[in-house]
Length: 462
Image (tube, rainbow, N blue to C red; front, side, top):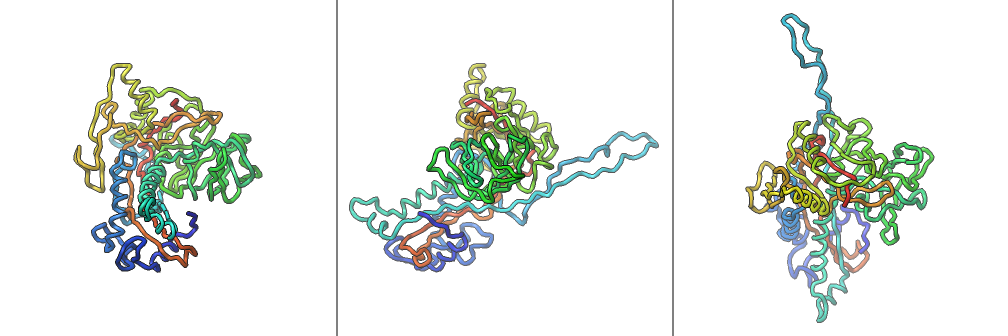
């Protein structure tokens, strides 16, 4: 059901709605299915005055935190009184050295720090049914409570959306250009981008990056290949997007993805380059390959697919340890999970199984308790297969296998401003239609306090 209402207006309409009636809750005041008057305060579910909101919102939140996906593997923390942190990118040079009995002291050289800014992101899932459809669905031969059926479907979609955003890829290969405002990309990579993401592009013809800062406004998935509309237009330096160019993210409208973290300056994509940015870090100055504090390790092969090998995985472990981290979790797609399993079996080396412990603030689950889960391991490090892991592309745009990532989860967390909440809206006058509408909203952001303790392997065969 089309709805271009803003989040603020939706909430305002909900507060003007009339409660009760035969099409939903059978009785109760207005506040029975709305945000309570004290919602926009720090609070827990037990402090929310609205039981209806807490029940349906908590159902989604609990389901999300008990799925074997990457979102569940990262610790959850209260947002706290912060909008960012400092990232040390240079330890200083020459300030530590041996000194003779009467020798001069080392030259003072301060560390270099970058300010990282991070703000909560709003993830929203809406649904709705017509008043007539709700009434008819309850008759003989109907599906029952149509609004409840859509509510259940929207809750599953909300869970899927959050993990999809967390695992979104950073790039896509352009295979056509319709005009200056539309660019057709490979359909299987369309999930890398979301409405509101800011994109730049690598001009393959002139071998240069184009800072167009175009923001995605719409997708058209009814055509093949699908198109996405951006504003302002795809123009920079008198050039427009053409076949073979590379699109890449410079600012997320949603959750900062793990693949965004595991990127570096001039990272190879489809045999070309991409300067993927995260938070307030810019790849041109802050995310240089091998940078001590802000550059992740990325292994790629210029768009040529290759087999996943144990030396590639071991190199990721080594790079993280050299930066002072400790690899604690591997994440990959189902295809690479099977490839690694077969690789170990052929060498008569087998995956072990361990209880993966999940963090929530300063708390940790005990092995085997709800919230943790069992995972296979390689060299004692758990391996989590996630179907949402993005895939690489070849130099001709052919989709390859899933990427392989290694994390030090001590430096990854989900900062939660507000856990999932549920709102109903029955303001017929505002909607100018006899419709019942609902919405799930979650406010959070993925934080990575040290990107250099993250590693990624791309350009793998499926």
